[in-house]
Image (cartoon, rainbow, N blue to C red; front, side, top):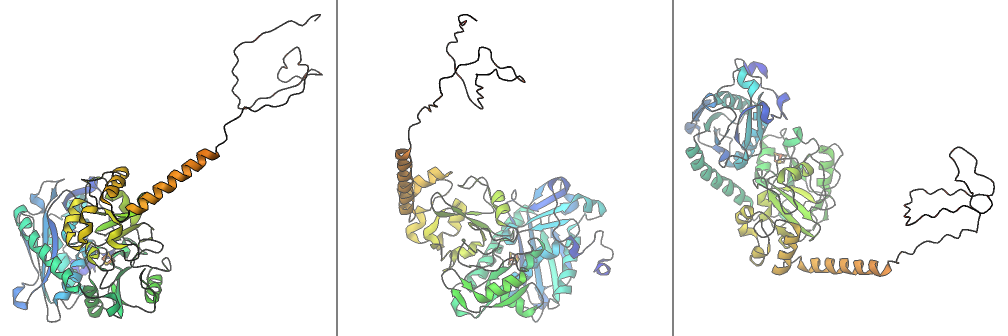
Amino acid sequence: MSSAFAGFPIEISPAFEGQRIRRDDMYLEFGGPKVEHKFELVRVRSMDEVEDEKVQIIGPDLKDLKEGGSYPLGILIEIAGPKLETDLEGVVERRIHMYTNYIEGIMHLNQRYDIWIRIAKKSVKKGLDSLKWWGMALIKLFKAEMPYIEKMQVTFITDPDEVAKKFEEAMQVYEARDARVRGLKDEEVDMFYGCVLCQSFAPTHVCVITPERISLCGSLTWLDARASANIDPKGPNFPIPKGECLDPVKGEWSGINEVVAQRSLGSVKRVYLYSMFEYPHTSCGCFECIAFYIPEVDGIGIVHRGFRGEAVNGLPFSSMAAQTGGGIQTEGFLGIGIEYMRSRKFFYADGGWNRVVWMPEELKMRVKDAIPEELVDKIATEKDATNIEELKKFLLEKNHPVAEKIREMEAAAAEEAAAEEAAAVPEQPTTIGIPQVSLPTALPVAGQAVPAGGIKIILKGAKIHINKVIIKKTEGK
Ligand code: SF4
């Protein structure tokens, strides 16, 4: 791969995938939690609309930005080729993550409207002083790996006003993409699709993508994954024959179990697509949201990546992400894509929306159209409850569907406490029968034999309270 990148100031290799750049080592960052507007977008254009291998930068370049800062960024990639269809836009877009991480000293996280990129100081020192290197590397990588892309141009937008403007347009494109698959049902297709693109970060993670379950990163719909698997059979997306339906409620299929076991090298053997309990889908680290079980109310909370502060369970997103991600099955914690909340199969086995009790206001507003009307006011946000006690009170007041269960749990807890109280025997002073004995006239001295006829009392861990000590001289002695 290196000869293709002759003249580049930094190396480009899959060996850099998974690289992490800590704050102390970063030159600057684009996007991430401190920046409101950021996005990456791929559009398929006609052949004459794309100027092949053109990289343009709208706004200040790397060398013009102050070191240590966090900046807005829009990445627009336009591609053309006779075999390209708009179905492939999402697939190509998701590869920006993978190929950017091939570049020495550029770390790329997340996707779509939520990207977070860090540039390493050491790479800037080596000569990575312009975004053009990143753009040129992407063009070479994409065209080498996806030969059906015949022309490609990359535009980096760093001008804040321009990023904000294009951000709105990008959001409309994502929405239109997700909407295409709405209405398709899992039962109606005979093939699901998988994705292992994130195995470089989470080696046992396998995404299963169905019409009614978008990938947890929110980037790949079933249509996208299908288009990708068809055009690039050796790539990270592949078909999963459904096999036998073992449980239509929990969403278990023999075909999924087989493929996931094989692709996770045996570490995951069963997967329930529609439940967060027992055998939940694995989570890598790219999830748009985390669903978390709240045992005190027997409900589910959902928090999105952009939420600052602590969720109602007292944990910030980052702490829960550490518990949820890594490609393992963690009962009660699950990474999900936002679009999954619009699915008919959204936590189908766990009660669906009837089980959701808390989510940040911003997220709730975003998916309000998917929440059954009668539940909208019954789901708490950070404005209604910031801890479990407040949440319980809110749910009971609003008579949320879990309220009945909360009352049952509280009644059971009260009964148990009462039973424990009744069963408790008051502590009685323990009386040890000590035979009448003659105490020695002299206290035994450590290391000496106790005088004959006396007793030795050893008290271990005892507290002795003495109000008065009377010492009498024995007659005749
Ligand atoms: S989260 Fe899943 S679908 Fe998205 S890129 Fe990673 S493995 Fe693929």
